[in-house]
Image: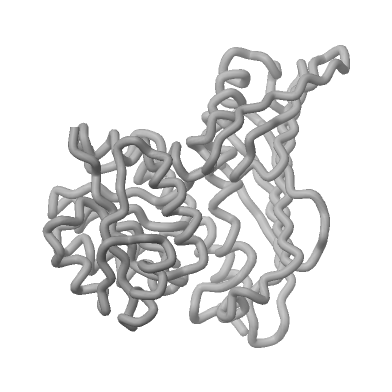
Length: 321
């Protein structure tokens, strides 16, 4: 079977880790990388041993040897970059946050449908082996009735992201990390979010540096999501049920979790891997081989619902400023 050839649209800081994940996948290879400045693309292509460098996104999209384009541009650029690729008939794996508003998200899926090409939001967390074990344990009743979930995500320093505090660029704590817990929790619980409220902290003229969301899921499960970019505290997710609980450190990239039963006995689950991106890439490869237009896991519906939640909070927090 021929390998699926990936093109990468951007030289963002995530790219080396994504390429490492590609190289762990038996069915994928990296073919080319594009930047708006050729020298930037050439530099990263040399560093990562990527065969082709392009000096424009358009060149990448027109290359017939590229099977799918991975897009990790800065947040505000996601929509236009994905629209360009889809309009050229290229399947797309688009980094989170998918888009900054629901209208853009719906348009991209409509274009993909029109063109007959695959489109998925990149959400590596739901494909990890530990995530599958957590989901199976919940489905099999290992935690009993799920009453409470909590997610804490903390980044003590975001200075390496120059546009992080720019609203126009799509910066902010919720934009940056909100998709992970919002989508992860719905996936492992198998429940939609029915109600959500939230507050945020921000400086005048800047976007949010921290936010706190209160959630209600179907069947009465309550939850909390806290995201902060100034504290050095553990990032972890806790899922509590009537028969036990699971604690998942760094849930979006983890290789372990801790299960505690009703008697207080704790067991560590461990699933070692080389790259947390490989499982997502393998899923995308399978979708392409099966000629799917959307993922049955990271669905169009889950993506659009998440974009709507995040968009509503930014409107609530900032539209009247």
